[in-house]
Picture 1 (cartoon, helix red, strand yellow):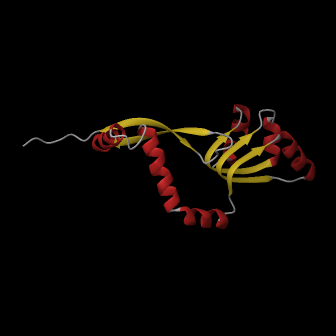
Picture 2 (picture 1 turned 60 degrees about the horizontal axis):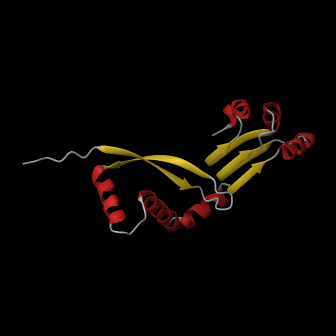
Picture 3 (picture 1 turned 45 degrees about the vertical axis):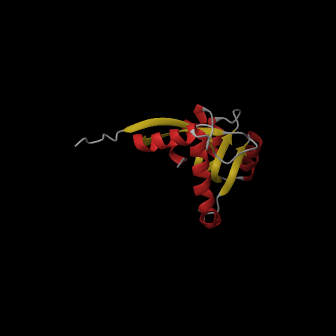
Length: 149
């Protein structure tokens, strides 16, 4: 009797974060068993998909579509912004002048402008919750490290 070894192969993919206008992508690394990977390769060879990433994106979108109603309900319940949120220096300066602190909650991408100083970010951003990706310069990230979740 021959026993098969089903190890885990690591494969990198690039997946859209739902921001088609901005074209922003994030790289994900997933682990797949060799049998699953072989089946994916077979479907690619047979022309069902153009490559591994195409199949994986299609599978992810299918699952997101299947659960779309639950995602919408959760976003509404948790008062999350869906998509892209750009935070500019002007916006933070207005918040600072008004004595306001921002609570940023996003499903997608948050981009804090490169001209935002660490001091301004710390003075005006109370918290950041990002389910997706946060793009900010290193100084801003460091200044907000205890406020990012």
